[in-house]
Image (cartoon, rainbow, N blue to C red; front, side):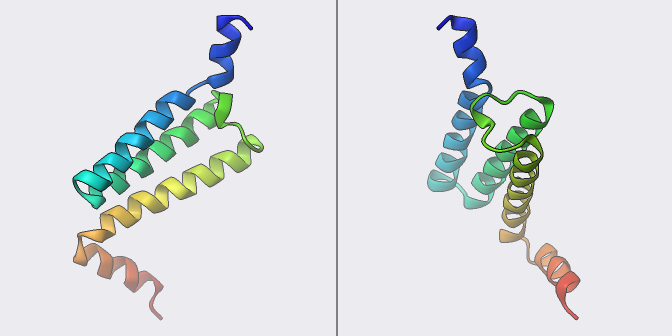
Length: 99
């Protein structure tokens, strides 16, 4: 296997993996809010890269399914990390679901 073929098969996977490891490290050693935000951002970057066609090891299912799943999961992680330390924002979001 040539180096170009090997690079193409991995795609952006090592970058996303490194970002996820950094996000988990920040969550564990520093602050869960910033770590969750970093993890959500990395997952949304993975969704954007998958949408742009840089698949490599990120391609698990169809492009549409991967982008929707990664984007939704990343958005929920970022939103949850923002809610963790902000009672005012938590009240606004919970009021959207209250009847």
